[in-house]
Image (cartoon, rainbow, N blue to C red; front, side, top):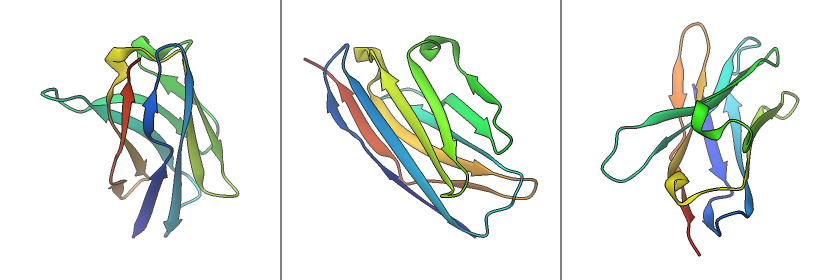
Length: 115
């Protein structure tokens, strides 16, 4: 099994910045994909960004140029740097780990973008 622990959520002003972290532990496979999803109130969960262990990053269109995903493979940790957040980025953000066999989710961390 893989355990995911997220941190870094909270309140941020529009145009500010915030960084989320997600630390994975357990049966980590060398080839994996880690990323972030979010779920706003009354809306389905949506993919935000993800990054393979080999370093290929992908983003949903609405966050390109504002959010940056990165990884520290030595620490099995993935980060999401959120720059210039907007009120529409308000959601619960979930970390996801997947490999060739399994998929795991974090417990979620709430981000509120408001002045």
